[in-house]
Length: 231
Image (cartoon, rainbow, N blue to C red; front, side, top):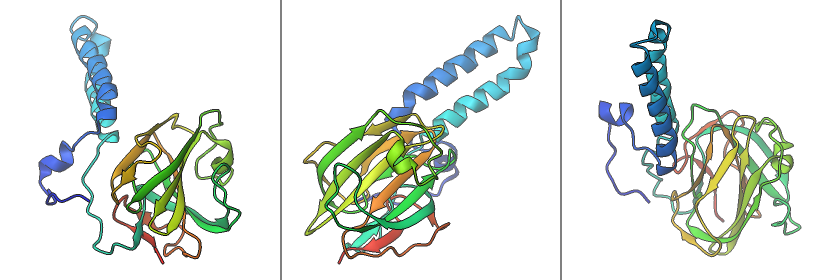
């Protein structure tokens, strides 16, 4: 749980904290912009590309922004693991490899390229199993079939007496899932557990008997928005 105080300064919006995963990409974009700027002194046609090149580099850094989040005091709340909008709600079994033969409510949150892409734990708990499926397709992540066809990473999490699952799904543009936890690792709620580069989706399979408390189209904030409650 984040203990720092919220920063509402202009600087925090214009120069937010950047996830370490994005520093490399931001520096590459900045280097390209610098080269365009230098060449523009000799190639006049490049003059018009200097400002767009630097704006693009700034945009790359912003994509990997990683702001602090402030979970509610309700310890039984199951929080959204991702920023974005709820795109699917349905009853189904856990993902293949984690299935327990029971039906669970699945809440899917679609992240556009404009959303923060750092993912956070819905509850405190232990990552019982992590399963990365690298050989996959890249359907639009908002489609239901993306849950079984796209590149993805499944997590089985134990929170007290309850178990639930999370799936990170690569999308049409996203081509890289970056898990940052291991089997057996104990996590705090709202703690960062990974990210997906350039747009995608997160599925949360709620514990047995737990119903979703959100609606399709609802805007979610990772580590803050409540999607249900542990029994």
